[in-house]
Length: 146
Image (cartoon, rainbow, N blue to C red):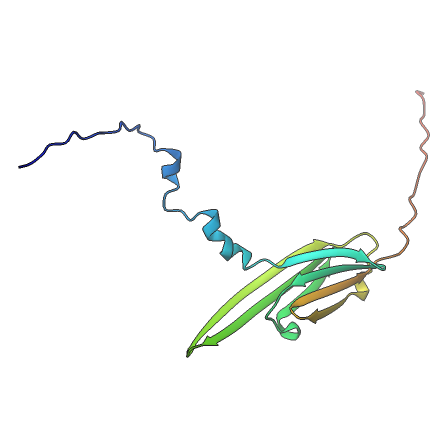
């Protein structure tokens, strides 16, 4: 014996619901690991006459994988990571390029920058002039009509 149940039909407009437009697209939460893996975490501070930038870049060879440049007052750190993990007869490679730029403070001595790498932390030290340049003040005379 066959039972006929009433079918409920929802009226549909010609335009899809906003949420339906994004069906099948990855969410921000799903994309986050992909985005986060290509960012260099930075912290910066001025200490004892030096502007210090610390970058978290574990798993690199600083002699081969890091490029630090300064141009137009911008410090740029580029790193390339190639990592190989082996476990239970299986190996896994991961690669990534990382770039971060940061503006140097006024008075930065760009020709005397030093960098060190220890335990996954790259530290870039930029000497900063102790005294700020004197503020130049010009008095302008206002002339009346002629």
